[in-house]
Length: 142
Image (tube, one colour):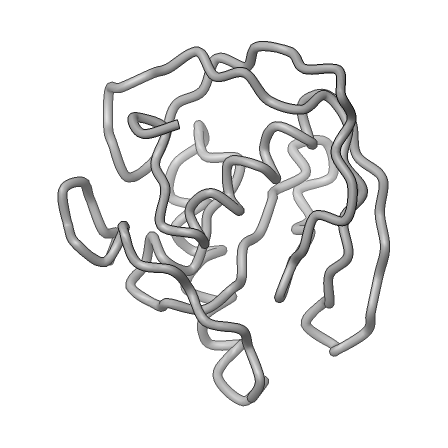
């Protein structure tokens, strides 16, 4: 049940997760969508019709998922780098986007545990892409 451009839902800002009761169901649907396509690396809940601040990234090496709930970028490096990106919501469209090379992120996992992570390069770009989704932005708008 993926949502595609120009669906208006993609342009809305997602709401903070306060009640974790529905999180597991949302995560199950997101994982199923990623597993159905080998090219997918990450997906936000917006892309499957839920306006919640949730996204997951699939680790292609061990096939496990990193879950990000209510993520917030605390710091961005001044150094930027171009990232060539595609998007599940805009099939066959790619864009070269200038992103911060490094970020410091605070987030919660599905077990409601607080985490603080430092990311750089690919994972930094991926997280910024997914947070753009949570804020109602797509790669054709950045």
